[in-house]
Length: 320
Ligand code: SF4
Image 1 (spheres, protein in one colour):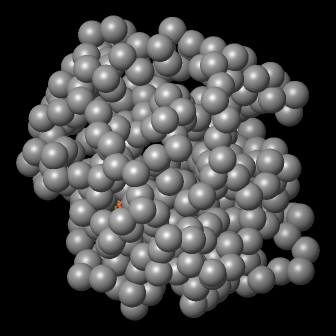
Image 2 (spheres, protein in one colour):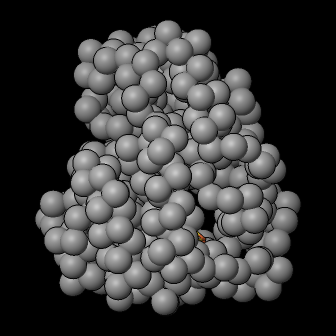
Image 3 (tube, helix red, strand yellow):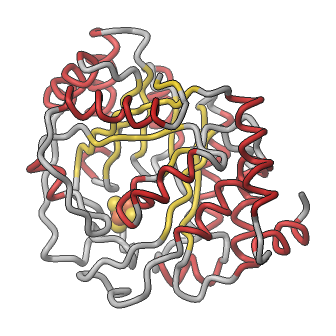
């Protein structure tokens, strides 16, 4: 699909044929498997000023914590015992993690439990030499969402930061051999349908191996407080188009979709998605790591994993 076709598709009254096509492509390219990933949020400190995010450096009411490598590995150990085979180590852009040393020790610790467990990193715009060190140290994948390709909007949302720098890091990741994930938010203030089409095409330009596409959710302690949340239906359209544009990509149903609408989460699996991620941190950390407001229950990691597998089976799919 070219840009014009993508823009037209996003605006259709009836999107059914695209939903069906995306589901068909998902079945051919990815089968019925749904990959379940564990997310370990290792730090809620962040030096970035992202106006939509509850962890931005200006938010004085955010609860800050950071883990050391041993704590990350201990949580990963429990997740591996519960059946998880991919650990997503995610955090704010915490200067303590900028040289990669803590993450490197965490990767080694996780790989020493089971060398086949994949490690995905999501730690912001790290320097190329740090990314190389982490890749050489065993990291498999990296997630860095571009959030929006509208340069003006990007600079408004991230004062002092440029879209081109983020795109350069995405190219660095590809060149270094990472499975590279990007993605964007749907429903940002002043975001046009044309810019959403560009966001989708940007994924093909990298090209991305994974893409996280989620609705914007307003956080009360940010500058964008009071703005409307993004549409979950428009988000689902974007996931379907991402499946058509990138047939082999891994496309999660993002946590943000599930927070706004549990029903929409199920529908997205039938319209192109093949991945789900689940936070495995203890509740005290889940409560602190608030990019957007979400109430998460205290649940037993094993019980939660079983519930997730049952949900996937109820959709006629296979939990992996
Ligand atoms: S979106 Fe990420 S980089 Fe931006 S403030 Fe939040 S945690 Fe930091």
